[in-house]
Amino acid sequence: MTNNLSIKEIQETAALDTGCRFLQSAFWASFKGAHGWTPKYFEVTLDNKSFKLTVLVRSFKKAFFHFSLAYIPMAPEKGYEAILKDLSNAIKAYLPKDTMCMRYDLPVDFEDLEERKEYVRGIKDGKIQGLVKADVDIQPPDTVLLNLQKTEDELLANMKNKWRYNIRLATKKGVEIKAIHAGDADFASFQ
Image 1 (cartoon, one colour):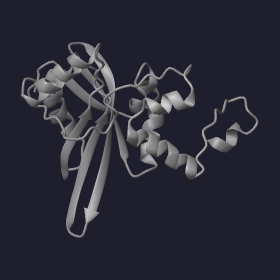
Image 2: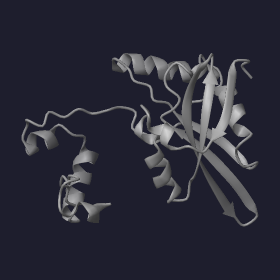
Image 3: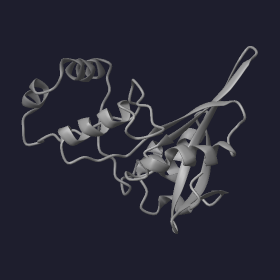
Image 4: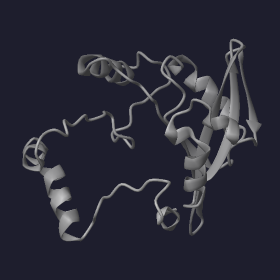
């Protein structure tokens, strides 16, 4: 383990929300906790800098086979890839003994598509030690920006077929999207 890396389990979830990404927030951990995941919270210190980390654990029991998975969504931030192996080993001590793997969905933001391709190529080629690129992304790998000044038909025409299909299917099934604001009279019914 890196000599200057330390980790401790913490209970204070409010501290997580200071400047963190949504999928590392106490709200998200609570939501996932209500759907079968067990959130664990850590304070990680490296080179006298610390950050909070939420690890989600899911345990499965199938006949005589028991196993757990650990999932770390959108953390740690870009630049910490070199310590992921040591960080994983440190976290492992706090996880169920039957944990099979830890999955990180790193929050990597790129200036352009070529920079992203180079980063992924580096993982696949083993240039970033200890990382193995999963075949499937859980979190969207990119952000899509839409010009909402265009008509609905123009927006649909510029989408992939599958996206158009899903939107039309949702419409047929009666799915409606509307904005709700905290000051609205019926806001409480949406919580």
